[in-house]
Length: 192
Image 1 (cartoon, rainbow, N blue to C red):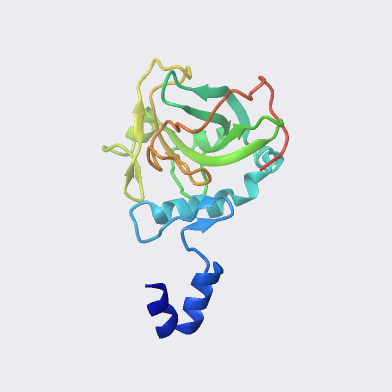
Image 2: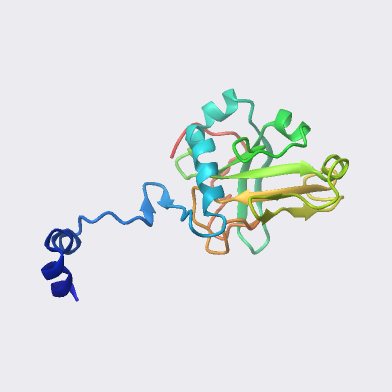
């Protein structure tokens, strides 16, 4: 096969054999979103909207603050650190370019790694103008009834694991490869 490729397309064959052919499935921060698959376009939008927040101090300057500590599950991984923009939460409009929450994972060196975004809307505010549950670009939100562990009224949420590949799915609540072990109870500095 390699010889057939190199004989038919010498430059492509040489690049593949030399290992220099760029892989469209990889990027600096994990797999690149595939805009041809369901959800790929949303992941790309989230990456563009949150690129600036790799440095948590930039997110804080934009109105995001740590709430809920580090959210972990009993056996399904964790959600990580939720930096919430309360002004965006108070507005029931959903905009993929303006996530209500940016999510970080605490690292052993004290830094934070941006791993995704979370869209949140209070159920009562949403249903005041919408009869159906919210969805964003084909992805249905998950309902958290009240009472819940966050002390919030019933709300809808959609996690988008745009910066750390989730083997359980891009839009599920829990990430089996996220850990809260390095969280000391304080907000940490920038990092990647």
